[in-house]
Length: 364
Image 1: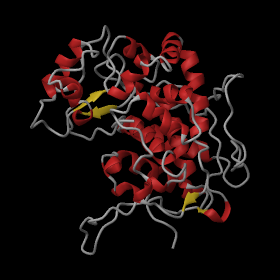
Image 2 (image 1 turned 90 degrees about the horizontal axis):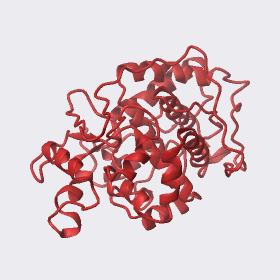
Image 3 (image 1 turned 90 degrees about the vertical axis):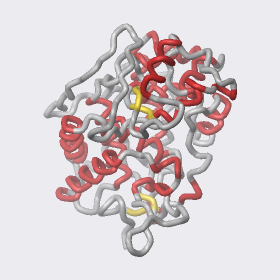
Image 4 (image 1 turned 180 degrees about the horizontal axis):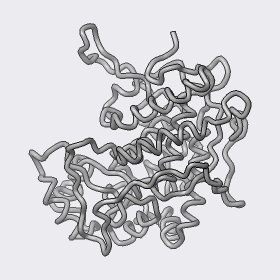
C-alpha cells in the first residue's frame, strides 16, 4: 500500500506543516523489560482461521523465550533506526499478500555471475513493487533471526520472526501489544511471477483494493483497519506526483486534496527532476506515533496517497473510517484482529515449508 518507511541515513524527510500539531522529531521509546499484556480482539470480530494450527504458545516447549528474544532486537533497532519500524510493517504486508505469510519476500535478489543483477526477475524482491523495500527491514529480521538461532537453532521460522518483529514495532511506536500466533513454515520458493496483481498500488481505487483484499480472504473492515498502518511511515514523491500536478490528465492537482498539502508537497517534490530520496509522511499530524490520526487526516482531505483518501470518499468504507477516527481504542482492536487474519493467509506447514537458518537463503 504505497512506499512506507525505510528512510536511510542522509535521506531528506519532508515534514508537512499543514496540520494543527505536527511532530517534527520523536525520541524512540525503549521496550519494557517484560512483555506487556496483549490486546485481545473484540468479541464481535471475525476470528482468524485456526485450520493451520497456529497458536501463541507454539514454541512453548522448544523456544519459550522467542517473543522476548525478538523484542530485545527490535527495541534496540527502534532506538537506533526508528524508520525500521514502518519498514518492517510494510515488509510483513508484502510477504503475506504474495502467496501467504511464508518469508518468501526475504529471499535475496537474484544476481548473475560476477555479482551483476539478473536481467529477468526471478524472486519476489526482483520485481518493481518490491525493489524499494528498505534494507533496514531485512536487516532487522536477519538480526532477530540470528539472535533466535543462537538460543533455539533450527526451531523458529523466519516467517514467525517477521510476524513478531512487526508486532513489536507497532507497540514501540505507541500502538497495541498483541499476541502473535506462531507455527508458520518458510516457503521453499520465491517467485517473481506471483507478485504482480497481489499488492495494492498507491493509486488503487476502492474497487481494486477490495478485490485484492477479497482474494486474501479479507473484507472492507480489514482494508480500512490495515491501512491504518499508514499512521507511521513515509512515501516517495513518485507515489503521489500525479495528485499534486496532473490529476487524471487535468494538469491540475487533485481537487479533493487540501490546498495546503498540495503546496507543501510541491515545495520538495518538483514535477520532474526531483530527488528520489525525498519522502513525505503518510500521517502529517503525528508521523512518528502509532495512533488513529491517520483517519482524521482522511476526513480533512489530508490523505497522502490516492488509495488512502479513497477510503473516505467511497460510501462502502467511509463509515469505517469515521468509526476508527472517533475512537483510538476501537482502531487498536480492529487493527489487532485484522493483523491476526492477515497473518494467517496461506500458511505453509509440514513438508510444504522449511525453517531457514538464514532468512535470505533457502535451505540446501
